[in-house]
Image 1: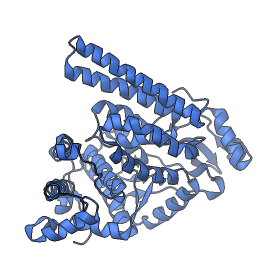
Image 2: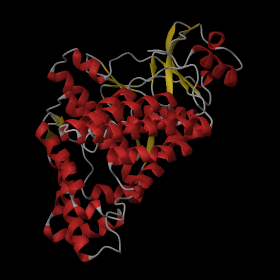
Image 3: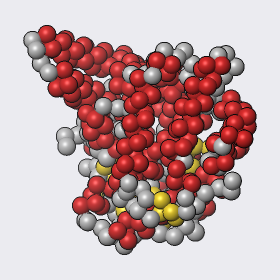
Image 4: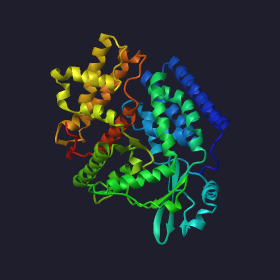
Length: 438
């Protein structure tokens, strides 16, 4: 992949890139409607439009990097709310993007250490091993130890707020959501992205969570080096392993798949219910899977700390008894506390949303209802996705002027969706379900 010699860092440069992309998307729509007028099949035309837009948006975001590309990465996990063309294109942001050129890498080290990387490490590979949304990873050696050195792209932290404002129209196009929902989503995203650009915070959280979770079987963590780390540079031991798609090409046994899946489940269970702080970026690029059934965890940049009052209300609905008729009044109170409902809702809207959220809870919490769960069951995931699609057609939701759900639920829901999706792709079929006490 060709390296990138510069990243647009000023607001004007980045805005120009977004405007240019918007013009391209406008051209795609014109082309779409012209072809439609001349009799192109509607479904074929829609798919072609999605593919053209996905290509142009991803190309722009991958050059801008930072929060713009991170949003693409996050959206790629939401397979149930996005056209397939966007999912396939944006999935690339989980693993690779055009890397920075050597001179920019050296410039970063000179700024934070006053030295070149060759003066700090015994050896340093100038070509990036991986390049994603916030930064890229290089291989280095120090005292015969192989290291992974993560370098943040220039200007990422300073451009988050303005980038997200400019990403908003693209998110509206892709997701088909009203501005109020996009705003609520992007406000929480901005908070987490700001944290992700703070490598001092990531170093602290990485060490704390790794130590706290070190007892979990088959989970491997890396060692971090504060002395070779800085505001935009993070150094750690190199972890061997394969990302999910590479791992599946090894044709692992069902036993190994289940062993890794169980480790993942226990890792997230312990964080969610004991630490009340969770690695909230569960896309496949952050996990390294091994043929012996162990799992390496990397990148603690995105950690969601769970407020106690939100935690209590959110996990009360896992209890299957909460969906029984005699607990309707208590469940209604929880829905108000979690902002699924608000005081302005008419009785008709309350009844509608109660039914909607009871169905969603029944679907998403289904693994918690049993002792062992089969995540390889594609019918279960099809049911989730089809229900999500049906919600988008309901006039009560389409015409709603209220965003539903507390902002804290955004990353918790995303974490569970990401976890479920990985377990499904691994075809784990016998996962023992640890769960909080009902």
